[in-house]
Length: 75
Image 1 (cartoon, rainbow, N blue to C red):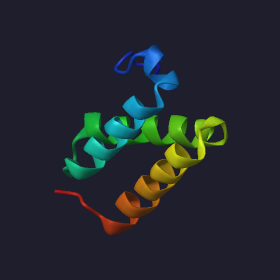
Image 2 (cartoon, rainbow, N blue to C red; image 1 turned 180 degrees about the horizontal axis):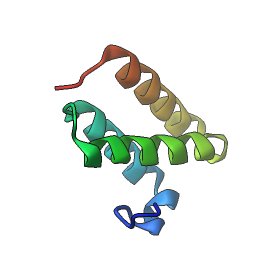
Image 3 (cartoon, helix red, strand yellow; image 1 turned 90 degrees about the vertical axis):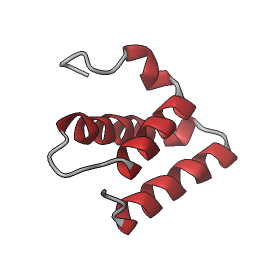
Image 4 (tube, one colour; image 1 turned 45 degrees about the horizontal axis):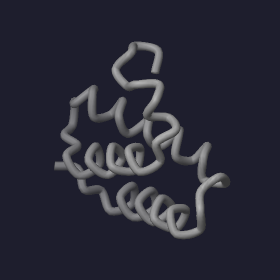
């Protein structure tokens, strides 16, 4: 990310991105800039890599993005 908050290496770590996405969604509080940035960063890179994942991981990612973003788990 441009501000340097997230490691460039994380872009290649699908499990790490998924964990970051899930944590940022579940712990999200209104006005928490870092959590909003974590959501945007992880979502962008997960979506970009979804075609390169094995079927099981692809399903997990799609489920997390669909479920967490529509359920509104914001704290």
